[in-house]
Image (cartoon, rainbow, N blue to C red):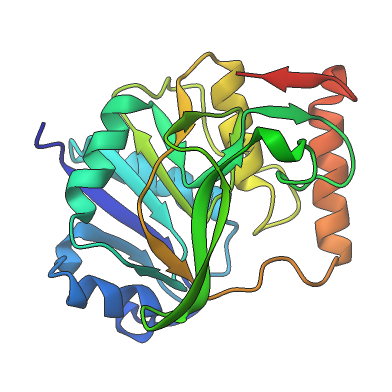
Length: 231
């Protein structure tokens, strides 16, 4: 299936050309007309990603790919892979869990037992210096996934399922809430194999904003508090 797609990117940088993502696009001959870029961004990722969905729907784009600007796409068959997993799942990421217990701390890999983790992501500087973290088997159905890279088959996404813009943490929890909301709406949620290198060490500082976002998350899903949700 030749599914039309757009890559949606929010960045604090002014131009796409200043990002690691752009370097990988050039390397794999992915033209910038495939990208919806929000530069100098001060808005929450939930707001930006919802706007990206609206733009895609208005222009008959079938597949939305949400990716961080500090990601290097590390495969030559990127388009084949993203379309393949959009046929396999309604929404998908690269790393997640097949069972999640709603509790503190609200981190996808710590709300799950090790045997229920799924997927694989590489971390490092770029395509020449990285190491893989293998979480578990893939492709696999999951309840929740990390937001470094997300694919959404827009033909399968109900109009009432959106990124939650009410969460006070602008750059956290958007992914966990979206994937969990999709699971609760009985969409097919999964993780697939799209090799990337993420130039980020992950969460290092627990800020007041992060804590307020965690509080919002726990209140939103309070009916599932300390309960385990599975695929």
